[in-house]
Length: 357
Ligand code: SAM
Ligand code: DTB
Ligand code: SF4
Image (cartoon, rainbow, N blue to C red; front, side, top):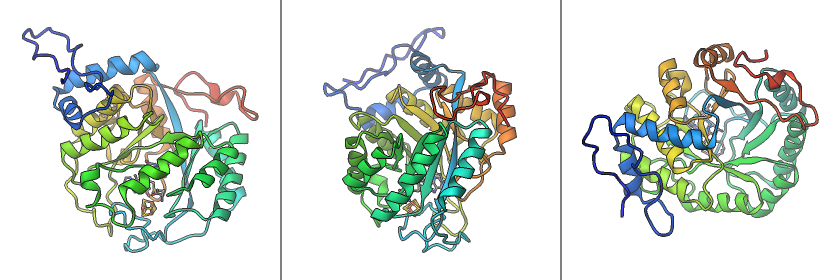
């Protein structure tokens, strides 16, 4: 039975009893229940998301995560959204794996600017054994700076996940990207099950799972709900859920897609927060195309992390000083480094939103 309250008759009725938990005996979210969340009046949805957010997190604290593309372009996959797929003419040139010292320089700079998480991405279908070793060295070095580490390298085998765990990796990012129903319209070179298998290897190795998706690819609301239901029904659900708004890159098949209604993006954040209460919900790609008011709504809906720094992997992101100014106007503080970390600086533990640059 779906736990939706009857429509409140009085204008003052608080929507406290709208869906807050999966209705099935197994605790699984049905797509219909997630659609019902999406269908709530906007204010009711945000109210519920705020309540849940406040139960588990400080609503005025976010994490700054900096991304680095350690291996850019030339990817053999056909992900229709991706500027790094070799088969699309996007102007992204294929590069070799970045040397360790350059990666560590970038991580130090990110830390000096106030990031506490560093995510390294590689345009691979899957890494080879020697590449896992090279990335493991990067993980060790970045971790030694006191930063939280995340990598996204494509499909992983069980032993590869274990090697990364051994290097101290905190999170592995591998997105489901969209619902199983819409998936075939976006990617043909790997299956949904391939993605679930990689997530299982990551989970089994004891690495935190970072798994989310992209909206604005022309999917329906039901398909967005299908993605969220898949994520929320992973057992356990991911510790980290990046919600990307498609960055339309000329040359990719998805360039020219009708942009998503911005409020639908905010709804997606809210629904992710409600269905995965303790996850870090990351307002990820697409921020450069959002105005400040929209980003503020995303924080109100339960987003508690952003990518910070002028570049995502190959596309742009807001300027760091503009982000710091926005957070300051909103009274949002940024997470500090763990003081136990080997090389943590006091600057990064500053309690206000001024940034540390
Ligand atoms: N190659 C690896 C893989 O796909 O598993 C890791 C890197 S890949 C670029 C990481 C994620 O970035 C993708 O799964 C997708 O969700 C996101 N992404 C890529 N291009 C994007 C775009 N144009 N807009 C929004 N998100 C994008
Ligand atoms: C994720 O979900 N989004 C990030 C991160 N994980 C690796 C990547 C966004 C990429 C946007 C397109 C680009 O810059 O190439
Ligand atoms: Fe390759 Fe990853 Fe881009 Fe897909 S998303 S084309 S696997 S880099």
